[in-house]
Image 1 (tube, helix red, strand yellow):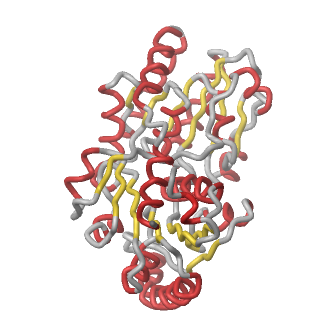
Image 2: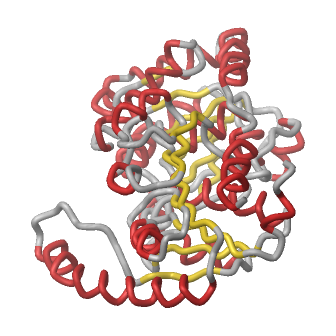
Amino acid sequence: MAFKSIIKNECILIAGGGTGGHLFPAMAIGEKLSLMGAKVLYFGSKFGIESDIFKNNNLDYKLLNIRGIQRGLDFKSIGKNILFPYRFILSFIIAFITIKKRKPRVVVGTGGYSSGIPLLCASILNIPTLIHEQNSYPGITTRYFSKKATKVCIAYENSKKFIQSNNFILTGNPIRDSIKKINSSIAKKKMNLDSNKFTIFFMGGSQGSKPINDYLIKNYNKYLDADCQILWQCGKHSIEEVKVKISHPNIYLTAFIDDMGMAYSSANLVICRAGAISISELTACGKAMVLIPFPQSAGNHQLHNAQALEQENSAKIVLQENLHTGELENIIFELKNNPSQIIDLEKNALRIAKLNATDDIVTQILEIAA
């Protein structure tokens, strides 16, 4: 990367968060830029998972008192929406002053409600911007700011139909350097799992999934009876409820996993949502997966994400509405009893992985900064 000397000791602002799907790409890009000598400043929300992760990773960050518009009609949601204009104005003032003071060479937005205000401030201050969109159907931040962005990086070819920009490039999704596949037996031991048991990793995304948790509470014994062990990331909002109902030596229950590379490596099979970043990480690790698309995702993009993998024979799909039918158990046991099918899924997942996405996005940032 010939331009990297241009950003040495220069500020690059990266805004995104709320969920891991927006936060982890931001961190992957930031890690690479930091190694090149850039001074990376992260922007996020006090209400997103970044409020803990930024602090725990000793990063330079600013948290805005902003959250997305609530779609519910209950009093709690209405109250939050009434506060939105005040939160927006205060957050805008803080972001504008910070950005004007730090003078970033480029402002990068990776989506989520915390990225919109920094991108707006950058537009007003005539600072070049790059947007990265993880999903096949772009979020509202991407759709709004893409027409003003210097460059838009997309993960799916289909996304270009929804953005008002000719300055887009297909890069795929960046993944953190820590997401690496290691020896399965070593990973199982480090995760306190039995290295001889077939391991199923259930996860519902960075914040967990109530439908997946409810399913597993009702059905976990089926897997234990088949001599499986379960690694279960249930989310911080559900951990106490699940702990009361589940306690078994062959179930490793956790609210959140920092070292996802270790978790993926320990699993023979991963059962998860079809979020873009989860899929990118799993394909990069060459993992066999069964995807349960979140049915309320914008534009039903998770179903489209999952179908793209299914067409390549790199994943199986079970719709959330079919979790009670026994379909998921049938697929899992079919794969467990036919290891060659798992090997085929793993090979095909790795074949479609975009392993250079982070470098490609960073190259675009360097070109903009030049």
